[in-house]
Length: 290
Image 1 (cartoon, rainbow, N blue to C red):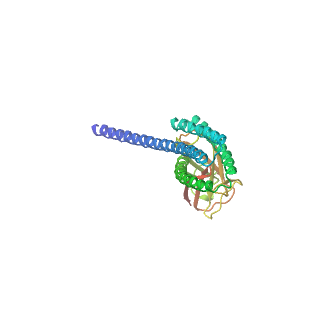
Image 2: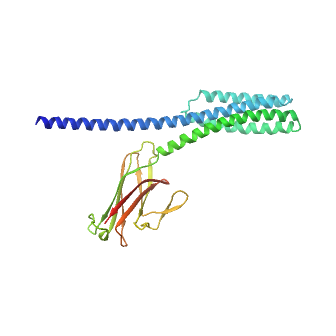
Image 3: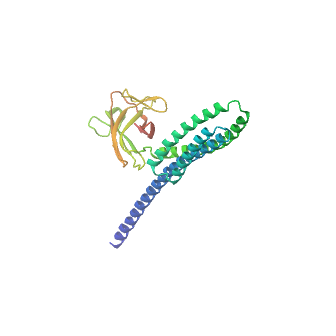
């Protein structure tokens, strides 16, 4: 009896250890995904700061190339406004979405105003050779700034892709069962009247909640698709599907079962089941039947 209690206690400890490990891994995954999104926001903010600094620099360069006091005063005022917005941006946290959106809108307005002044200055100095040389120097500085921004954009794109991949659904525990006319498992495909495909949509805390349409595609041993007549988009083309089902996804593991009513003779052999959602293949498995 004592040995039985010891074995039960050992199993309980192992079970608790497994649960603790799974929770720890889930928390680590969530923290990593949060960190990726935070880094993405920081890169976006840094990119905006670089643009504000670049615009302020352009105002300085334009003022050194003209002798029109009225225009210089206007440029000075706009430069001060640009620097003020830059200081506001530096004080804002990358996580403050409302303020970031406002300053991004202001940045677009500053860009348009700057373009209008650039056109004025170019018109006043069109024939001035010294201005062309000065513009070349500014262009070199802007090119260096653009290269910096390109590097930030590439890093931002990489993080965006990581976040998108983390948010994709995943189909697990895929099974396909041939059922006979009594809705019981058929031993041979010649007795199959219905194909039952079941799977789970795995838990994903970063995926968007709401209605999701799932497409199930069954390929026969001959390579043909058991088609219902409908198609769905996948990698710039249309694929036939066997069944589709819309589910309400809440981010938690969700079981799904679909059925294909057999209307033709099914050969024995290997059948491949592929599951798609949101333009991605989220699971696939091959089954062999007699």
